[in-house]
Length: 276
Image (cartoon, rainbow, N blue to C red; front, side):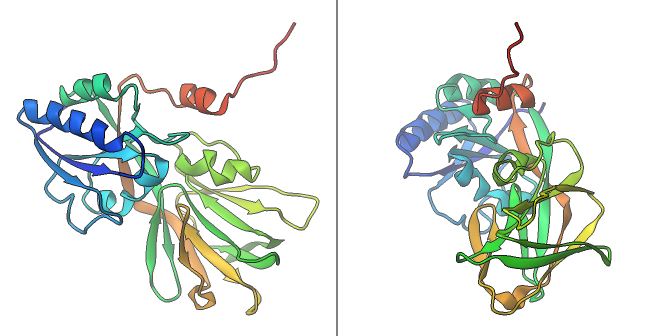
């Protein structure tokens, strides 16, 4: 792969050790005559990634999710360095970062495309989600939501909410709500009810070409729309929502020997039952 010549560093200064690690990596880059730019601002200043060749995010998964919109806009690959708890989307842990960063700077990396969700409100506000779009109650009351695909009713749900997940986000809220683990290369969209008021609780997997519409059935329900864990709307007038897989992708820079299922086994302590 092509060697890197300009990098923007996004640093979550609230994470212990983030600034020190950033300084170490910046020094490594500049020793190779690589131009660097640094920000600690959230949300990212618009256009800050415009002239860079990649973006290094030092923090946790939440920090990485905060750069999705800008990185997608500029088609810029992201290197994630995890100083948080899980780090599902990170390229390196803090312990791996120094040695691994040298490897990437030499051009020994792969860039993978991760699908993202488009969420469009009735007010024509558009959001990108790398993990998930979550519609849920903002109180202890249940909500009644009906989902349509290409004009056809899928089902009506009386529940705490619905999770619409990308394959990347399938190991987040979707999995906690009982949804399936999906390989990140799959071109699908998952929908999983949160605590539905029924004896059956089934996720639905949609093809990436499907366009979903989500209707809120009662005006007095208190709902919140969360995009990648951030509250984006509490306005009932935003419904119905249109949810689909975007024609854009999030670019993630990974080591060449990256293994998705090895990561899941490690992060989730996922093991089979012993036989004997």
